[in-house]
Length: 407
Image 1 (cartoon, one colour):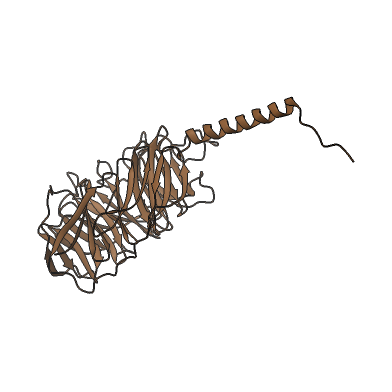
Image 2 (cartoon, one colour; image 1 turned 135 degrees about the vertical axis):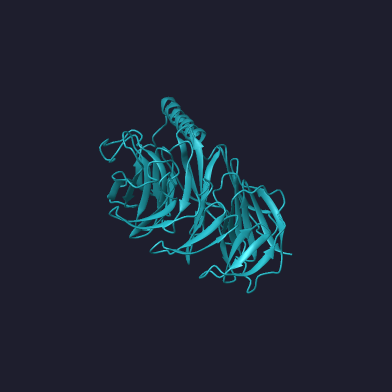
């Protein structure tokens, strides 16, 4: 029988040294990871999404409000209201405003969005708005994360299929699991520097859909803005696939203020500002870049204009009026003046913020069926976006989120 192997002093020292190196490496990874600077408080009990009321109330009142500086719109998802401020994303009880969950990092927020029952939170580090985390909207638990070079400031939007992160120099499209499907514009340390069709362009505006991405860009040595229509999910995310790209020769394409409003499988609609020779207009293009329709506006659109998409139509808040657009043709369906922002749906009606409260409209015709009073505190004519969580209406005004309910 063989004698058991004996450990020498050198063996012991080697094992201790290896263990120490492993501990140091683990500490180094932890110190430089996002986990070290993250505080996550998940829900002890998830909130059941409350039912939508059959009838609208006779009057609304403010229930609570909280800072919401990093959001781009009012966000209500599942059974929670979501606010984003400083470095913290908070899921709240929509009726009381009490914290249900919290996700906090030692980095400043760039923005938040939501779709498919999740919250997408993007933070800024030394590579721009590069740190993105996907949270379960009901519990606040972390689902996944991604990191990539981005601009120092971005806007985020969700189209029901993808999330668009848009900066001045670069944009990315993400799937519901945060896997990138497209990068466009500036590329940091590209493996193949010839993959992008143009360089040095400023990305002025962009809107995504399930099968198309429309980008308005301003490129060096070009006399007007350029409209480019892309595949939001090409075979290779680093190699954009263009359906069309052309310089806007029509009036409005050479002045500041043009923007993409919406995109569908076959069309793109732009806002073109007025010039000395032309009125401001909505211009509709097919995906070859051919203009197929124009709709003149009575006045210019504000730089604070907002576009929202509900199942029945696209809604364009111009700064003082609301225009409904057909989701396929982008033809105007109806318009109403003297509104404060974009609508939400509740009890079969379209609720629109107005000076004295909320106007209830027929979604098909825009005809007003009721006007519900709502006294607003500390309101200074900021554009308002709405979202509904059961019977509670969420109003994002400026950098605050207000919850309103039946009085």
